[in-house]
Image 1: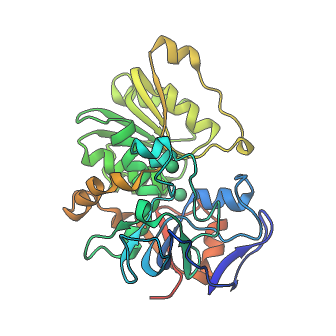
Image 2 (image 1 turned 90 degrees about the vertical axis):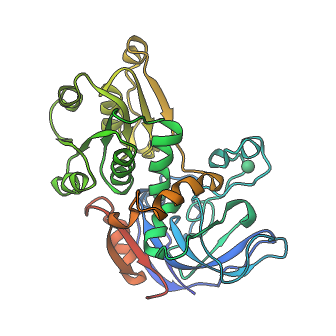
Image 3 (image 1 turned 135 degrees about the vertical axis):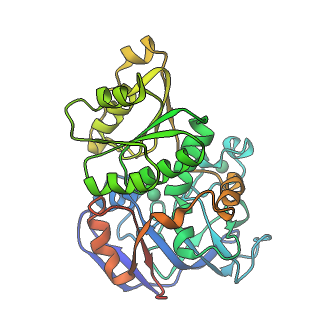
Length: 345
Ligand SMILES: [Zn+2]
Ligand SMILES: [Zn+2]
């Protein structure tokens, strides 16, 4: 099969022929119809993830069709259209038994712990635990972001942040996950302040329903958010993952506010200074959100099927596999979500 390969961190990203994957006994091989390019792919390529072994094929946000299944797979058959959470859970450990496969102790992640979906096919383990059937009529390009960014934003706001109608939500960083968060927050009845350094990203955030936008390069972002929200956000997300956006997000909160860290913060990119004096004085909650388990997908999928959530509006570019490397290396420079169709259209 054809796949996007890198042999050194930060080195060339080349499309080449590699051996076809085979399914594990409880796993499947999915023919990839669409694979998003996400900031975490950029982290993997940049050498920020200790799980990545070279040479490597990135890609973890996918939709496609089951092409082969191992002998232990019961729920899925060749031809089923599926997506999968980027955290593939084992289904047996304590977090999994509690329904929290997104923090599984034995998790695998396509594009990190093994070769990923910027390829014509990808192997996925524990298929009965992890695969999610695509609703009829949902295009693969729309469904791809459900594997990571859209689902991550959905759970960060609903399951972790427990957003309520009428609350102010600040979204720091308006790439794919941030724009998804703006849309989910608005659909939940919240009022949104979007923050980014790129005017194009802020325009996109307004189109997703953000009521106010703030230039992320402003000298005092938390003060700007506080002025627009009458004292600070109830809920704030660092959707980028940087020292600056993390700190600004926590400082943007009103008393009793909740910060949710969504963007990855590998130590290689620096460690944020958490203002613990504010966490105490304002009784802030500092929370983390790591994807979403397959069992939590139906609630999100029903809102998508009903047209209340529109992940399709976030897809700004469709690329062939030959253009995926350049797009991955340039993550963050163009607004919206780029989706690769590795097998052509
Ligand atoms: Zn991702
Ligand atoms: Zn587990």
